Structure formats: structure tokens, C-alpha cells
Image (tube, rainbow, N blue to C red; front, side):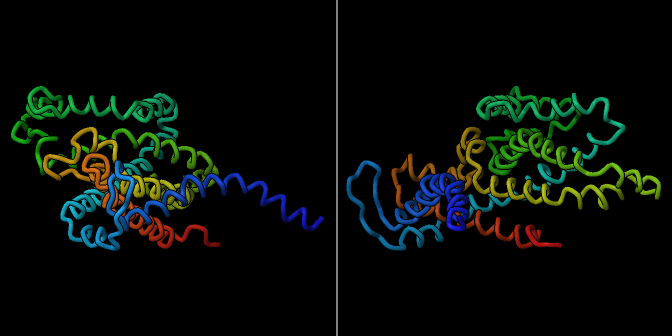
Length: 293
């Protein structure tokens, strides 16, 4: 009986472990193994080159540009997608906005349901230097001197890409915060009202501590997603002009599938995994998630 009790839980988790092993850990190990070889996807043989791909990687200026862009992506995303989404969710759940909150939730969530290709076409029109809505709006309000070719300018291209991503993703993060806020006991806010605490004090003393776990999960999703971002820069700029909006995933794709440099692409993929894992571990350590209070 005791042996059966030990086997049953293992049988329940065995399918999940198999899927994780086959689709997650085996490809990771295979990718790391491939990074020690120089090979083409069309070649039946591989040439062992040891750590030369990693030596090239750390001297590659495009990799450094891509990594900095990913970090910019992460910082801006944490501010807008996480911090602003938490404020937005708090406002939507406030009793002052309760009557129109369902409509506003739909408005904020609609971009999440739209295909990234459609959104990219939409923002290509918005950023168009001749007939784009953004430059037209700036000229309308007397700020025409700020109008630039947003995607064709090396200084603004990465920020234009990041802005599109924020617009699409903030609705999803906001919905996660709304679910967490709805679970907070109303008695806490009623007691705070009786004690004379204002909305800002209630936000920092009740809302933020009560949604701490959701806050951590959203930050983890946002930062790791920023380190892996591919669709937005690839569709809008393909990393250009030059390499100004290059990200790690786009560079890996270009090396592997355009230059057929599969060994080097594997090394870039390994670096993406290491950087993402480091950021995730730092977040877990700093947040203290999982520790008993």
C-alpha cells in the first residue's frame, strides 16, 4: 500500500515531465551542443570549433547593441506594462469608475486579441513620415519640429518598436492585476476609509502588498518576454536601420536562417538563455517569492 502511494503521484507528473524533457530541456541541451560546431543546415557534416563561437560572440558589437536594446525594452516595459498597468487596474476597480469599468476593460484588452502582423501594419501607417498619424498630430499641435521618420531614424527606431509593444501588451497585464485586486477583502479598504487614509495611501499600503505575488509574476513575464522579443522588431524594422533596433532574437534568426551560420546562431541562443535565466533568478532572489513570512 505504501509503495502504491509513492508510485501514484509519480504517474500523475510523468506526462508533464516527459513533455518538459522532450520539448524544453532536450532542445536546450542540443542547442548548447551545436554551439561548439561550425555547420550549415544543408551540410551533412559538422566541424568541431570548440569555444570559438563564444569568443566571436563576446567581441561582436552587434550582440552588445542587441543586448542593450533588450535591456531598454525590459526597463520601459516594467514601467509601462507593470507599474502603469497596476495603477490602471486600481483605477478601474475603484468604485468611482465601477459603472464604466467593464467597457474600459474591453477597450484596453482589444489590442491583445489583434494579430501582431495587423498591429505592425497599423503602426507602420502611424509612423509613416509623410502621411503618418503621429507626425500629422505633432504638426497639428505646433510640434512639427519633432516630426521624424520614426522607424527610419537610428535614434528613434527602437523606441518606436517598444511603444507599439507597450500598446498591445498593457491590456493583458492590466487584466491580471484586476483579477488580483478583486480578491482583496473589501473590509481592508473600508477600514482604511474610516481611518481617513486617502487613495494613494490605500494604494501603497493595501493594494501593492496584497497583489505582491501577481506583481512578481507580471514582472517575470515582462522582463523575460523583453529578453526574447522577436515579432515586433522583426516585422517593423528587421533590426534596422543598420543595427539600431536589433534584438538578440532577431540577430539569432538572421545568423541562422539568412546567413546559414547555425553554430553561431546556437551560441547567440545560448547567450539569450543565460541572460534570461540570470534576470529571472535575480527577480526571484530580490522579491523573496516562495519564502514563508
